[in-house]
Amino acid sequence: MTDADERYELAQVNIARLKYPLESVELTDFVTALDPVNAVADAADGFVWRLQSDSGNATDVPVFGDISMIVNMSVWRDEASLKAFMYAGRHRELLARRFEWFERIEEALVALWWVPAGHRPTVEEAEKRVLHLRDHGPTPHAFTLRSGFPAGPGL
Picture 1 (cartoon, rainbow, N blue to C red):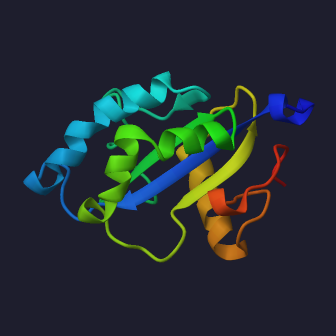
Picture 2: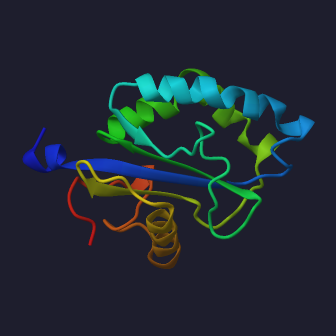
């Protein structure tokens, strides 16, 4: 691990547009899985922080001014820990079902960026990173898991 790796943590945002209202029967499996999956994330190696409201999750946190969109935002030690959580266990099972619950959207709704250790990103910051990724493609300022950049300040 380099000095830069220790001074920075990986922020991620994942925004999705719901196909149905959260209270609908169509989203029962998704809503029921939120607390257990969040508990697994909270206990995962490399997990640092996640956005949550008083509800314990972030489904009621506004994003892009669209009430049909929900946001998931977290901070991780590094890409390896984020990937280990994302592609294993219950989260992987839910990821495989995402198109049952969320609309397919062509434009970027997921972004990653490096933050100084201890920084907790805001939704406004995350929205700007997503918009930057849409406008400029992957850069150190905002990127994807497929186009990662080394830890450091994203210009």
